[in-house]
Amino acid sequence: MCEFLSELRPRAKSQFLATCSKGSMSKKWILAFLSFALVHDVRAQRSCKLKDGSGGRCMPVKDCPSALELLKINQQAPICGYKGETPIVCCEAPPVLATISNAGKKSNENCYNIYISTNYGRLPGSGPPPTAVVGGYDSLAQEFPHMAVLGYGDNSTHPTWGCGGSLISKRFVLTAGHCLKSKDLGDVKYVRLGDLNLEKTDDKAEPQDFTVKRTIKHPEYKHPIQYNDIALIELDRDVIINDYVIPACLNTDRDTPSTFTATGWGHLKFGGTISYHLQKVMINYTDYGTCRQAFEVNARRLPNGILEDRQICAGAPKKDTCQGDSGGPLQRRNLDYERGHTIFGITSFGKACGISNSPGVYTRVSYYIEWIESEVWP
Image 1: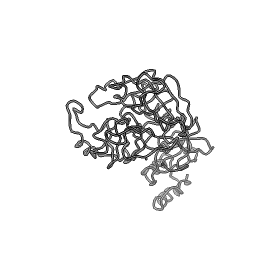
Image 2: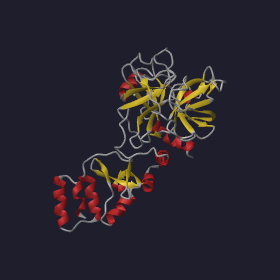
Image 3: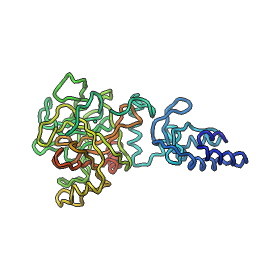
Image 4: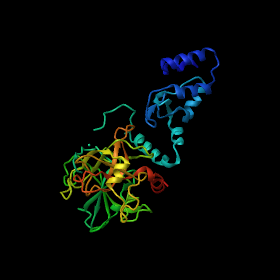
């Protein structure tokens, strides 16, 4: 059982060797020792390869049944790395998915199945690094294959494009609650996926157009109050997954990174013209205290001020989402999948974009995971 020595720092190795040489090591003690002695860090839940070449998921060793079984026969699961003092091992995929908590389990399973079954999955560390409305610049073809644009009006051939959204399954788009209806044009009727420039047909895009089968507004969204600004759109048929159209993953925990990418076909500046070419902009997380100061309590719209558990604030000097970007994603590249993105927020509201220097406010997706799953994967 002393084969674990290669994973330890010199001091830990000497301690382990002294005990190991006495022949008094139990499997339970080995596991406990590894849990505090290993010191490198790695992100759990990434894709990995098992010894037989099949796909697995990186998990804390204590949460991986297949790794615990290997320990019983003096074998070791492949090491992904370490999180603090805890070893992260490559675990067989079915047990990993079974250990995901109920809230988020279906979202993670869907994401995993979509990317693995369509060959868009990749191993950690492979592939190129990530490549970023107001203050933004043109997106590339196939760069945001989950990006949706919503259409309004009675002209199905040339609808009036408005809000954005994110494809999260083969049939559902995630957007903002206030995007389900336009004051001037009525209910949302159309959804386009896989496009890049809404006016061109030679822009290296392969659009797929859909009509709206039904809309599902969050039951606690009450306009004009700006809490629970989240909704789902069911398409009239399944999408065709290809290089241009791929569902995004959902953030299922309270992890809040320091930077995000926002995307949309909205206005290039406050009161300015819209962009027909999909824009992207890199913005930074704004801490809760600063955001509460920027958006004071408002009896009509924000009776309790900014709510950190339900909302994310993000922005940067002269960079912001703007009119027409509502419903679009606040996202990061997903390191598990070559073409994947994870949606952390939904563009909800803000002040004069690019002028006020106040952050934008985004609906925090992780707070609504159970509701999303109950509608999309009941």
